[in-house]
Image (cartoon, rainbow, N blue to C red):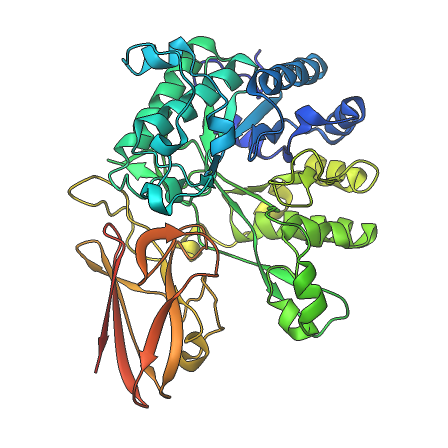
Length: 501
């Protein structure tokens, strides 16, 4: 009788959820200086899915060496447990140096039906923006063939190295010029076709930072993935925070042809820059509470806590995930860098080894169902605009859209809260969302629009190009006290209309 972890060609929802319910982030484990001990912890905790096990942000080394080291690590891990799924990353950022030092293999040209050339990837053909606005690093544009070739090239090499899952980063950023999703659909389909023929179990599993990526009723992803969101707590000593629900994962027909009301959701402690030294040196205690995670990125905040507090927060995160989103799972932090991804070959890692491995093993052994029986119903996470598609392209619209920024306290919400229910927009049809409020005081404010109530794909009035994070927002100028403001957002065009009365 096949084990619950068995799959070949397709993966059932039961089996996929089995892997996600035993998941950990193992970023760049292929570079580990003590892989034997890492494998010891993996086996002890019963981890079956190793997220971010390989990939590049800024390349550590030539690709040939990178893929070979990735292959060797995969072989060693699979020798210890051949059920384990290893995930590779293809991110939303590219570097001129990396692309223009990498020769395009003949099989990539052939896959795209192009004449074979002897040349390297061309950064200028892959990047967003006109040449005069272009630097030596930036977002790739998936509507460009060069970017599609770069993604496909990376994917097939990871598949050959034994990797069966892909994290595709902040997918809503590099698809900004692909609003119909035709280009990203093409690339993912090519990746999946290669996986059917060449992956270990003839199937690859794909996620991205998204709540939903659905085209004509079909999900382009096997499951969705997002980092956690926090709310600081100021009435307890230290740097305490609590987690905040960000809405549910969307549904659709999954890549194996099965309709799923809510696709699985994998959540994790993210990294983007480590400790913000400036925030720690220049902000007050109260100000720093709102600066990311107390002046850290997520994993750096976690790593800064004492080991007993780390264990306590793992327990809290596991229970919180089970209760607040019955379709979500927690990727435990087995290994995660503590500084920016650009600091290659020099960054330290947080490692679970010797710290929280017993607590991780205890929680994974106990399982989610112990707490899921008390979970809030999934309907509590519904926000309207359910299963609505753009009639022209078939792209699924977000269920939750929120206005956020400095104006929010003046309408009874928390400033810069991209997840606020108070400033949630209402769907009015024709791909548009609307919200009307009264601003009691004249002044200069700012705001942006967040799809799904997260900071992964935001838009403001300064550009139709989406952005990630809370830094960029457009102006909201109120000339008179008690001004009635109506804001309309067209999702497919990323356009915002401000009406004042």
